Structure formats: C-alpha cells, structure tokens
Image 1: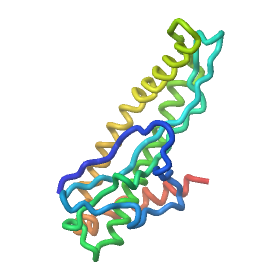
Image 2 (image 1 turned 180 degrees about the vertical axis):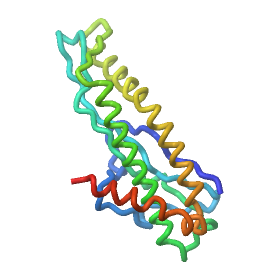
Image 3 (image 1 turned 90 degrees about the horizontal axis):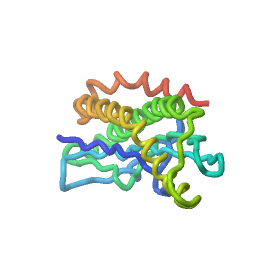
Image 4 (image 1 turned 30 degrees about the vertical axis):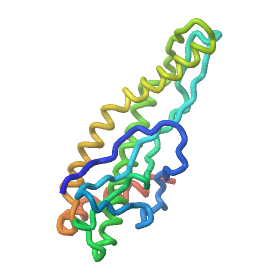
Length: 192
C-alpha cells in the first residue's frame, strides 16, 4: 500500500473544512472509498488565518492575530477497501482520527513558530499607490507565513509517513496503534 499524505497550507475560508476539536470524531461519512487505488489520502491540512495592520500611512505592515488551525477536508480523504475491509471500519476511523490528531499536534507547533517569527516585526510596504502597497503586502505576508511553515510541514509529512507505515493496514494497526493512544489522549487534555 502506498500513501499520499494530504499536507497543504490552506488559505482563506472553505466551508468544507472541519476544524480539529477534542470532541470531533471522523466518521465514515467524512472519508471516501477509492476503488482505483491503494492510496490513502488523510485530508488533514494546516490553515493559517491572520490580519495585517498597516502603519505610517501604509509604508509598513505587521502580521497580527495569527492562528494556525488543523483542518480536515472530507472531500479529499480517501482509502481503499482492498486494504481496509468493512469489517475493519472501527480501526479505519481511529486510523484517520489519529492522522488528524497528529495534524493538530503540528498546528500547535506551527502556532509557536509563527508567533516567534512575527511577534512585533514590521515589514516595508512596496508599491506606488496605497492600493498597490496593500495588495503587495497581502501577497508578501502570505508568502512569509508559508515560508515560516515549511519546516513544520516537512516534519509533519515525515511523521505522517511513519504513522502510515506503522498503522496503515489493519494488521499493522493491531500491532502499533497503542503506541499513539497516550499521545492522542494528552492532546485532548491540553485543550480547555
């Protein structure tokens, strides 16, 4: 079985995305069978949200109120019945929930990273008019945040590949999922 890990940095508002909460549990209605492939697509993403604050008559800007959220996209989460027969649905759901929980763990890490990088830091606005300066500032801010998240995304991808390799089939799940249970339980306890 091969695994394609859905790791993207979503931008903006998408009403199909489901935010991670300690109460939300992935159900069969959130994942799709893919009969053409033996590939798993977790559907987990990181989504940054932020505001820009302009100062000095739009000659500089700050990136403020940054929130990095773990989101689940049910439109891309897929699995193969060849690898996960109906009799293994309970394990399959725990498997997908675990991948989403890992994404939340990395969202928290990413939150700390971007706060450290952008706290009280100003960037110059380039452009001729106020409109152009604001437009370019928005593009630059998005790129700066994406660049700051690249190392976290790479590490998340690596961890997801290890997770897929350890628990990516029902037989592997039985052997190794218990290694992750305490980690996922701690994650839920850390949320108020």
